Length: 87
Figure 1 (cartoon, rainbow, N blue to C red):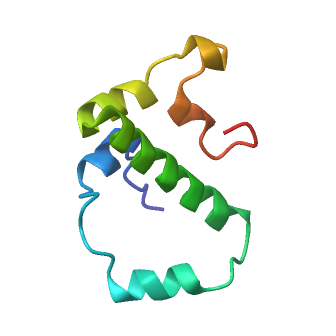
Figure 2 (figure 1 turned 90 degrees about the vertical axis):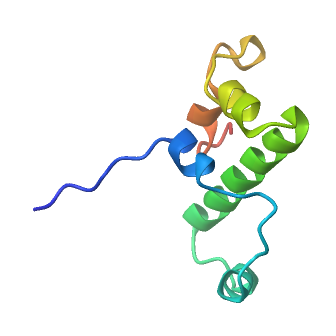
């Protein structure tokens, strides 16, 4: 069995352009009825990353914040909380 390549959140976000237009196929997909919790979690994680980029006004600073322990989060990293009930 072939092993899949592992990507970190920073690898994936670094390849994203937050100002790029949304493709029609993705727009249609977003209008579909959710089929499970993973869809909701994925959309939430994307929203958090986009909001962090807007707040920090820099992809690099946002990714740094997402990947470092935050005292207000009991020293958890925000990226580790994405996809959890707490996140």
